[in-house]
Length: 92
Image (cartoon, rainbow, N blue to C red):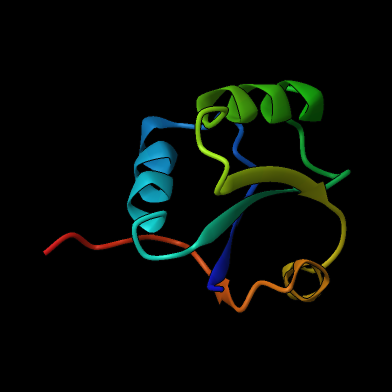
């Protein structure tokens, strides 16, 4: 199984983010949208609001999950056994 992590703060989650995930799901078996926590950053939306909004966007697709994480992105990749990091997908 090919699992990818799409990391970011997603404050807010944009149409561009949505597009990347929708393209990525054609390449990977599973995508985890990882919302990184940074206590020093000022956010427009709370973590709970961002989690709820993104979950609503993908509630129809069981291959896409959303999770919050602390610490380094690579450590979270190991924790969820993601071998890929999704940052963008070029359409040819």
